Image 1 (tube, rainbow, N blue to C red):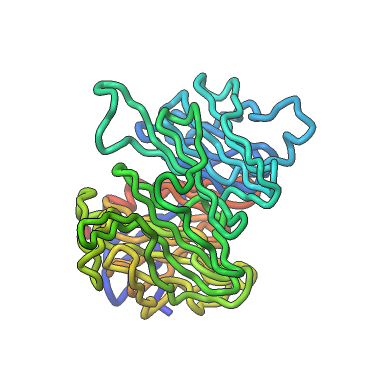
Image 2: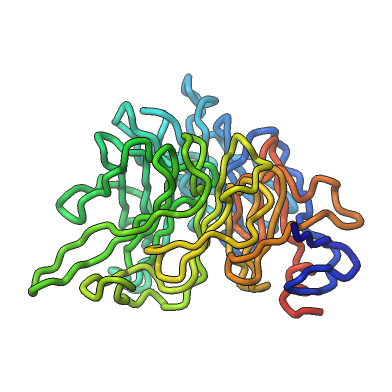
Amino acid sequence: MKTVRLASCLIACSFFATTVRAQWEMQRSGTTAELRGIDNVGAGVAWASGSQGTVLRTEDYGEHWEHCTSPAAGTTFAADLDFRGVQGLDAKTAIVMASGRGGLSRLYKTSDGCRTWRLVLANTDKDGYFDALKMTLPLISMRPGVKQYQGRVIGDAVRGKFARYETTDSGEHWTKIGSDQVESPAAEDGEAIFAASNSSLLYFPNGSELFVTGGLIGARSRVIAETIKMGKHTMKYVGGYIPVSSGTEDTGAFSVAIKSEGGGAPHVAPDNKEEVLYVDSGVLVTVGGNDLKPESTKGTAAFSTDSGVRWTAATTPPHGYRSAVAYDDMTKMWIAVGLNGTDVSVDNGRDWSALMPGQGDAPDADKNWNALSLPYVVGPKGRIGVLKTQSRMLLATGQ
């Protein structure tokens, strides 16, 4: 197993070497909640969310985390809401996603810096379960000069189909996506989406999406494709099996991220010239494994270079179950986190090296993490960390 020690010394690694001082710098959240939602808006603004109805906000790069009014404050179930996803639109506006069976899956929105919240979507399917929430600016704005976000929610299968909802007005109104557009993708028996880090779904400005799954049947990806045959256009989902740990309800692909290269331009599928893919071209990396066996390195990462149609297992995988992955453009590295550590890859997910705490770091700085929105990372018992700017700059410049 390769390791990288982030300290004031040379990093010994077979595929890169640089001098850095630290890795995740711990921040004070003031909560003991299990944090699984994190979204870096930029310019010092970030939002975090978690169990017990917890929502946090910072406007100063995490120097201070504000405890927001709980979205369901005053209700009998406020403390039961587990906010596993959050998307910040700006310093005052955000949407949080609660994950839970039936009515415990819901979305709330704030427009006044989290002083007050409004319920904007409630799950009405008793077997439904929201897994991921993503918001993005559209490729073409319907109201030039006005920031009007579009969004997507995806959830576990109900009556054999993965549940999907969309918004085109920054989350004010949500509509369940049905067969009037592209047919919702069918789930195989025992197939599910994981809500571990709000990163099992990618949603693009052109309205396309890609998501990854796991469970008894194994891990798969789904991506929208347009088939053009004899002048007839048909929209459907395609994808491939992902070679990660599988066979139980707790195994599969938990998170997916992309290093975009195509700018959202449509491109032809690799094995079918009659299929057009609308997912950004580039490199996709997915991580996961078995969340009940966090130390197991079996099947913890895979990568794709054809928009998720085909996947290749990592040659040197992360050294345990990983719940979140992200690409850091500054350092040109992939970063994956989990309960037993942090790993990085500089060859697009083929080989991974473990990051180890350096001198001056907390001894567990690399461990006990759930979710990423770089440079932030969150985890159990209110843990929040930030990847030190100095470390990122040194890694980026190779100094």
